[in-house]
Length: 106
Image 1 (cartoon, rainbow, N blue to C red):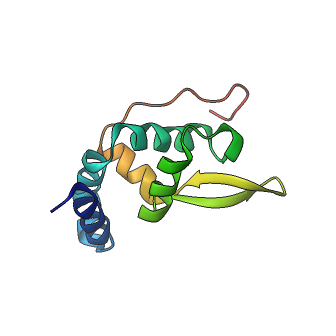
Image 2: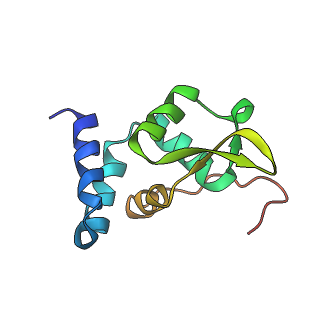
């Protein structure tokens, strides 16, 4: 089974309420270091405008996995935000915080 297949399988298993958190760390472990960094940016600086995104290809991977979504922010299009599932994956993987934007909420 490829890493992507493992991540997809673990995300599918998270859809079962009784297995949600037990599979979240498997998803984190299966993400590439670049996808983890992109996820951390979305979690701690998001929603992030396309011009400030670390990697559009890693963002697209996170969107395909359901860990990120395109959104509008303050009436403008062109932003990406992390999903609730992404937060659970990050917490279960004991990921490190990403520097917050100056002036953002605590």
